Length: 277
Ligand SMILES: [Zn+2]
Image 1 (cartoon, rainbow, N blue to C red):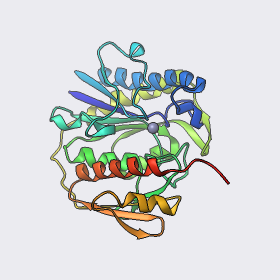
Image 2: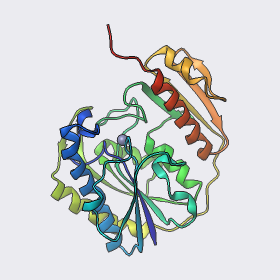
Image 3: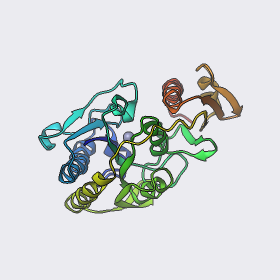
């Protein structure tokens, strides 16, 4: 049994503030160890549950945050950016039986600690076929095309609630309870590691490749916090304007859908203005 862990940082233990997840800050240095603790707990739990192989795919920002030297020696880690499936890279080779979303968070426009979908503030909403979409939902649709079930989700309580929509069967572990975008009641790394390890052990039982799901075509809509960002996004072929600050596109598969999404966010992030006023 091979498990893939897609590891994001905003939903990690102790994380509630932008500097906590911004590479190079003293707070990030401190929080990366708690992030690593969450991931390692999942690794240990999956091995407890009978996994033969666990691959960790870093999925946050520059994708260079986890402390490899603190991970269980049986695991391997895919670190660094430019991967064709980004946050769920590694799922496409036909050998993964289940995927875990560790450190996930609520989507843009939702309540939840550091809630966003790819870009922190510039994207104010994403909809997949008219349903408000988090990164968890988008990635769940991608992995379904490869027949891989989502078996475990960790993050704040809102991220866990969000996961009920896209992975109802998956085990969920809330490592903190949302109070506001930048505040949460946090449990300690010792406590959350025990919770995640126990859930991952249980989740290993759900890991079994399924029939690939081809549910497309998918229509993805994005709303931005400024009109010129919608204008900028339409540079990407197939992306059209549907409102003053909104664009949409349709893709035959979620594989294509997520790649177009990446192109849009890359173009848009280059068009975000400095602060003034
Ligand atoms: Zn992230």
